Image 1 (cartoon, rainbow, N blue to C red):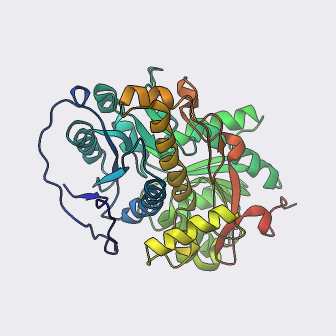
Image 2 (cartoon, rainbow, N blue to C red):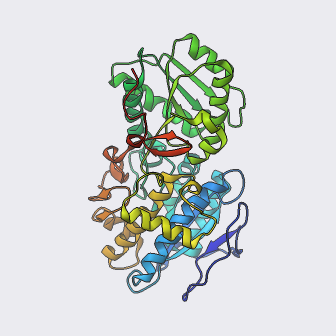
Image 3 (spheres, helix red, strand yellow):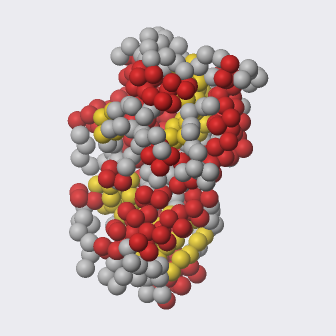
Length: 410
């Protein structure tokens, strides 16, 4: 199993990470149960580092390593330097579970950080509970990642969006932009996409609306004409989308071939790469998110971007941060982890878990006051009031109020 770790002090510049290139190999052995050992000041991560989703793990890594460098330059945590141990799961749930065992039982890290895919996070629920290993999500937005069916989530926390909260946000944006009130739902046939259906249906019902059409597609589908023809026949003029860049590109290309131009209001699976692959067809597509590195930035956020660029020369600018919300979430999550360790006063997982309910932190995404509350619904740190509408304009994904699409079309 491939692993990446922070180099020891003094820090040496790591070689550049290319797509599919991993630095270093970890020898995997069996350790004693994590509960019997003193936890270590490390963040253990299971990310998509190779394969078709390799860019997602890299986008998280940019932020986490940059934040760790800043934290260690300021003295570290409890007199020790914070380390990162990152494993590749290739987007596969079984690999994510194996990585969690390594992180919890061999590396004995204080906390684990998750990656892009909701199915991977859901697969970790029982192993994390068995090990008593805190987990911090930064992208995967599935409701059941945090809100467990048994109502007893103890160890999983998230600095990201939650689909149950995202759905009403998207429904309101779609309703404001629909001329005829005919809203459709298009979703990928994965655990994430399928899991969003009840959330959107319930949000529509709460808004006094019903879906005028509902269509799905498979990963790697290239032609979605059949689904779009049915939506057009249902007179749908606004589509709520749960998909990612590749299939979103194929969707708008199919729309273009049909001459069908509904407004798209998308969950945040669509990122900067969509503008690069869809070209002018991306113009005007609206996306929910927590952050964008494009357009006007605060002084602090601009500084973070500059430090990411200095550390990773392949990041030439904001256009290379392909998952802008995920990168920003990961930056804030790393600081929340460090602040929680300080509050706990010792490197102990149960003390860390309890301190998560007391930590306050002013991040680049939002002000976390407190980050978490001791019920599973509020194991999500980013509340709906911090959600933002973004839009593609002139090839960039920027805050919607910096585009012509801020006002609903009528």
